[in-house]
Length: 199
Length: 151
Image 1: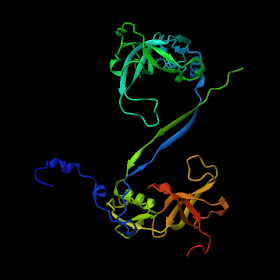
Image 2: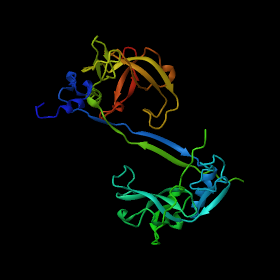
Image 3: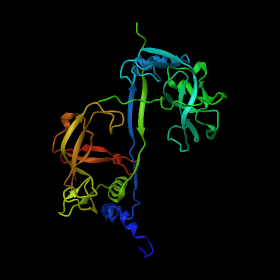
Image 4: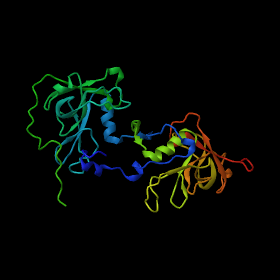
């Protein structure tokens, strides 16, 4: 190491076994070393959605979006899980929501995901609050340049063609701008907020 | 009558690529080239698969040595219902195999026709894949060596 290198570099030294030269058996003399290994982890499940999500998915086949209301707080959750995360009780009412809403927050992804060739960077994923819902849910913002997406932007669902509809959330291809005035968000305190209960 | 229960395939997959370091890298280099490596401890005993550090003294280990391609089954369990990504699509045994020249054992598959053909202490030898890339699966598995089947 030359004298003009900062001393702090010494603290970055690798553990001995990772930096010490190893000696190889004769049979491997001169072999091109393997330096990395692919070790994919894969878990293949058959997913059964349960009653609340099954209702939601069946409604999706008719281009309808169902939420469920908490009887204690009045909040509407989507996608519905059959319980209110706030009250910890079963939801009391199925609520049909509009397929319009606004962008509460968003993210622009610029790195591709392996085996998702359908997601072409840059793309914008957003937390979208549907009209009538108390919490946001995840969707792609499409038919607009990602740089032009903004918090409060009004969007509507873009559905698959009718002949391709299934009992699947994938029926919504994404969310496109409606061109309406932006939502003025004044109630961040309310949205998605869960109060801790007293011990 | 209740409607049909909805079901859908759900696959979680993490396509990790890990860097190996020189010790595991040498082991995998060997597998790619059809050689099985162990690593020698200060007392002369050999760990196979090799480890970067001595499990008793924590000393770094650096002397890789070639071990045999046949060895002894120390213990085994019959897998009568293999899952899709396991080493063999018919029933086989998982076994701890101590290769000749090694003092520790390696987990791998033994392709025996039935559990009745498996025994602690039996001799097995490596079956190599023809296409190898530097991965533990470069050894397809181990096959029983019939008595008198070794030169």
